[in-house]
Image (cartoon, rainbow, N blue to C red):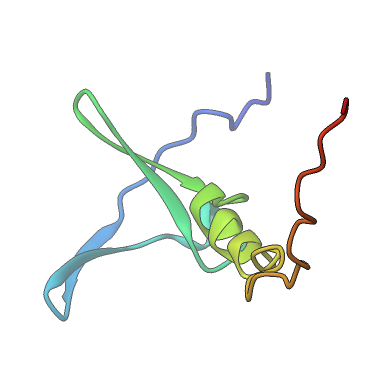
Length: 86
């Protein structure tokens, strides 16, 4: 295991609009624009958010196939019944 795997530091909390935010020190910065938060006993775990399944599903729904023959189909009338045996 890396020596700095469990490194800790203090960070500043501040208000941003109606939310509470945390200013991460340079050595704790993460890639991307979003993080995943998990409530754990005694605190909150902050992890890089590499994959958002809800966002992926919403994007996938944009490419859904339209209803097959949405407007219906025109089919000729059935021919009259004929007796099989006379």
